[in-house]
Image (cartoon, rainbow, N blue to C red):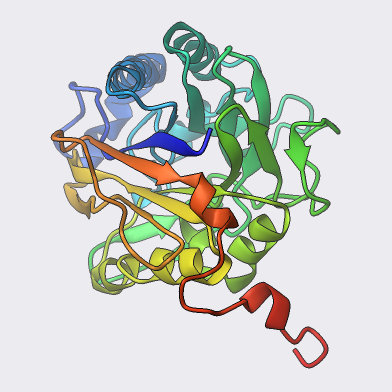
Length: 310
C-alpha cells in the first residue's frame, strides 16, 4: 500500500457533568468510571467516523480517556489508570478497530498489572482488533508556563525500557523506542514532551518508522510557535511522516485553552493537506512510496552523517 489515508483526533474531555470549579472536583470521586466511559464512547465514535472517511489508521489524543488532569496535583485521578492489555478502554478500542477495519493508536493512562507503576502509554491495535504492543512516554514534564501547570511526574513515571515481548511486529533494537509493523506501514509513537528531544525521532527512524504519531496536550506561547516548526524539521531530516495531535478547546474546571492545530508533516518539510471538513478530525493521504525516492533537494543525510565526530 503506497498511499495511506491517516487520521488524527483533536478533541477535549467528553464528560459533560464536570464541576465548574477546581475546589469542587472532589464530587467526581467514585464517578471516574463514568468519566472514562464518556470519553471512550466519544473516541469510538471518532474512530468510526475516521474509518467512514476512508482512513486506515487513526491516532487518538494523549490521555484520551479523560480530561488533562495534570493541571493540578490531585491523587483522585490516580484511579483513572488501567491495564494496557485488558483494561476497559483498550478493550473498547480493540472492538472498534476490528469493527471498522482500522488501525488504532490509543493513548491511555496505564497501570502496570505487575509493578503497579503508572505510565502515559500509547497502545497500538491492528485492524483485526489484536494488540501489537505499546509505547510508554519516555520524557515526563513537570513545570508551568504563562498559562498553567503541567505536573505530570505526580501521576506517572518515565518509560523504564522493554515494554513489549519479542515479536515480528516489533521493529528496532532500542527497547525505549519500538516501531510497530502494521497493515498500513511501520508506525512509531512519540508522546507530547518526547517531541522536543533530538534523539527520539532519530531512534524511531533508524528502526524503520514511516509514520510517527505524536499525540499531545500542549498550550502556551512558545509551545504554539514550536508546534509549527518541530514536526516539519524532523519529518524532513529523517524523511518520514509525523502526525501531531493536540487537544482543541477548553476543559472545565480549569478552562485552559488548547490550541489544536493538529497536522501531518511530510518528508519534504511541508504540511500534508487536511481533507477533513470537521474540526475534531484531521485526515490526510500519506504517500509512503515517496519515502523510497531520492530526496528532491539532492541531500542524502543518512549517507553523509558524521557519527565519528559527534
